[in-house]
Length: 364
Image (cartoon, helix red, strand yellow):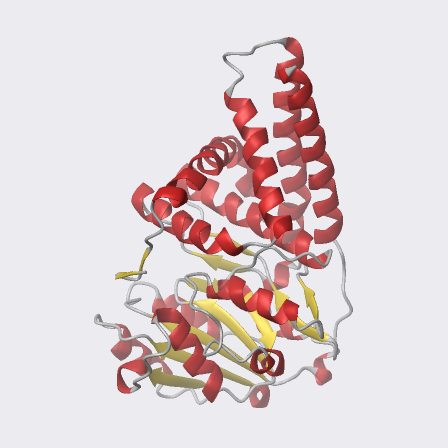
């Protein structure tokens, strides 16, 4: 009986994975370079003295028409050396603008959401792009993302991976691509379940039509909240192209504690996922739960099903990594598979009993 249930779960897992591949590989029309809209890049920073210069350097190297780009660096009350590093870097670069939130009083918004809202409010671009201070962007990032903004498009996301220097960072890099592959597949199929703010963009008009962050409930995953809000307008297309020129690389967590904190924040934010997202998570949970039972219910059929599930994950990730030019990271796939199985099974129970999130030295 259990083998039959496992067979059903793995078969469903295969169908879901194949469907997501179809969604993620969809292509979309792009604008010619002379049709590119004006863009505003908004980066919220807080105590990022270790990361900010690499981020600023990559933003400064963006290939985009000079009269159509502005880069807003919004400081969220940093207490380290971030402010002076930003000021020194941008002093002779006119496309950069710096906003210090310690000088702005707004009790309606908290933390990063407040910083993002302020940057967007001051921005003048038709399209808003967002990334994080611990990220570096491809020189073609802004140009590639903006090129997808045909008149009916309201939101465009890009893929993020992480810098890799061993198995611990390698499994995180694969996990980022895996989760964003799911996000891409669901968004391109018209059933958005998630996104990530360190490689996100949206039409400013669409953002304003949602009422902006000032009108939305507070969330520790403000990117996901905005995605859903724009989708609910039912006026714009939301797309997630699989394009290596829009790739962003972020820094991996350096410890188990830091990684756990990140995963917990995402899980808490994911509590408000639509039904399709809940079903995806539930199916993944049950499939991985049955794999854990392998030592207790061993049989040839059971082993074949376990190997089939692992093969599904690998051959789902392979074309995505190839398209992004990241196939070398797949040597860490076995570590990722173990890591993924563990957190998929543990996180639901962690969130069930403790919903507090510590983020940038603040507790929510």
